[in-house]
Image (cartoon, rainbow, N blue to C red):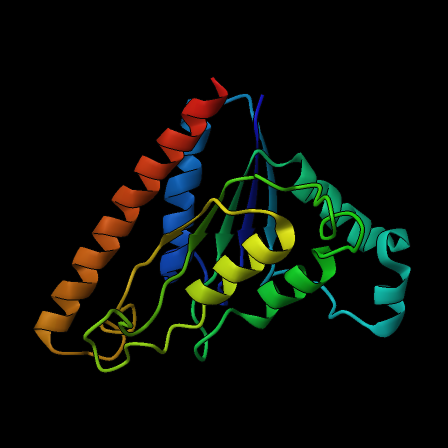
Length: 204
């Protein structure tokens, strides 16, 4: 049966966090398709990983934590990652996972051991960074993760689900902004269901 690696990183709990809620929709649909499958779950905000140190980097695959994280990634048939935009980039807790899991000669190198694994990223953001908006060009999450996975992990199938304007209800924004947020959130949940069904179908 297939294995899903599910990584949350929002500092907010379910019901408050858009990324957690959309992630839960994807996982729910995945588990509906594969009720006897395996889910490896890490809450990177609730149980943060330590930052990479020189000694740990030098130890590489001999470090128990790095070896465990690499093994989890290698076991995964699909990887589901929450990457809400914090200050124009990914949360530091997700960056810690990235730094730890990039074991030279295993996860990265001439023959990356998780190459070809599909990745779905839920990247919520408080504003909008679409072309034509005032903050067009300020999105450093999608380009960063796309380049990182393709360039180091050998993973070129990276899909993004992007709920926008998540801060609108919290800031009592204008009604049209709240409507845009609600529409974006709805599309994100629909997209999560569609992607989960499509990827799950590969392992029937």
